[in-house]
Length: 91
Image (cartoon, rainbow, N blue to C red; front, side, top):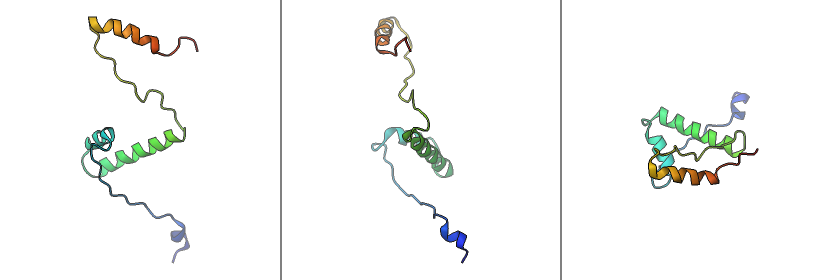
């Protein structure tokens, strides 16, 4: 036997089922891709990015940023009052 092949880690094989009720965001993201390699690769990217974020390799500042609603007369005053809780102007 080749000694090099004995020291190499074996690949991990995963088979799992994900229901939308378990994790709606992840489900919605993965269902966009057809079954197969593209979906698996997307899951790999998401898992790797999550791992990097967990170890602080890159910061996730605006992870919960929601696009602003379309401004109407009623929402203008709400926008002004919501800015009170925004980040400070002084750094």
